Length: 122
Image 1 (cartoon, rainbow, N blue to C red):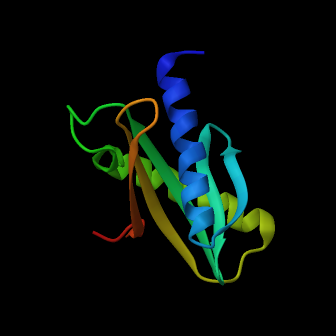
Image 2: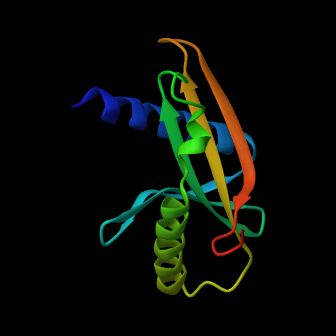
């Protein structure tokens, strides 16, 4: 597997563990709709949360969270709408970001951004 894919998978695993420790219930990981993907879908109490995970092995080009672009937000919103339609969703939602910076094989820095964005609002 390519190194960047290994890095991404490791970050997603660390992010899932992190939010689970915060009390989130993981419903789905790597949920796909057409060519779109939601890294983690979870419940935080009564809120349905769509989590984008960004992982980097270096912050040379910037912190991982800055790579959640407006296009990525739009794609997440589209996939989230498909998921909500599938489960007949009728409660609150939120979009969070978990940024994982892998400093070395055993050390990482995790930044959790609750309510990071809401599509269409700027």
